Length: 322
Ligand code: PBG
Image 1: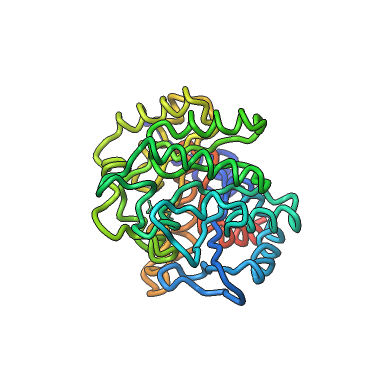
Image 2: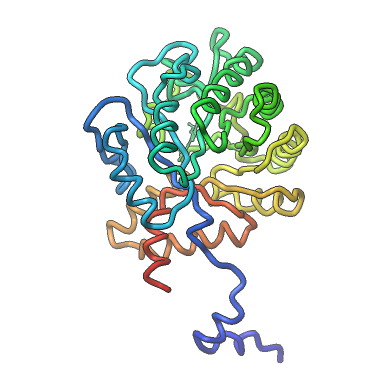
């Protein structure tokens, strides 16, 4: 008889044959930056995650650094919104001020900016509208302005998330022409029109005021289309390819891992976080164990990098385990 149980008989042998590990170095922690003063608001649907005003942010950053987390991804919750999201390319805009503050006070923390418009537009869509349709090429012009403004503020990496065609090419050209040849792009390459973003949209008040995002984000039924989109981003010069959400799309993570040699990231999104937190609060699941198991599944599928709201919880758990 073939016996696979031999190598499962005790903890020592199981540790010897373990194939996949989680490390704090794998994680990127998303941060919600809110305009204003004295703000430290817990997001109801995402227990443990807060919106921070810049004057309070050091409390969060000190904790992140102490836990050994090395990278953050910035999202903005502005006061003012307009049709084009013009604050996104204002050198004195919220994200630009956040980048400067973090890089000045925590120079070793790797700062990645989410490059999109939906948090800054009054209609909540990810770019310029032409009637009720997202105008792809007009949005590209604004994307170039936005990344340059982030680059001038000192960001370490940009992560365009709008699923606008031609994004990576536009962003790469803009950065190169301005001399930012060494600034990497993490492309939200395969981003699905997902209901798992629900809590995030509450967190940053970015739900579209009409319609949905299905003309730019991908149909959850499609896998080959994801490979095609990733191949365009790869050709256009993306340094890292990302899949979003993570848990329901691990097949896509594995496809990308097999087909490309650049690092692969996945985004463990708000709904995936909230479901585990909610079930755990009710005592229906063991929250730490389910968190560990899900993050491990992303690594096993082939992700090198995991963007996750669990970064602090997991970092704490990894500390107690070693
Ligand atoms: C769009 C953006 C979204 C998220 C990150 N960037 C959501 C959307 O398309 O509405 C979702 C993140 C999450 O759910 O955790 N700029």
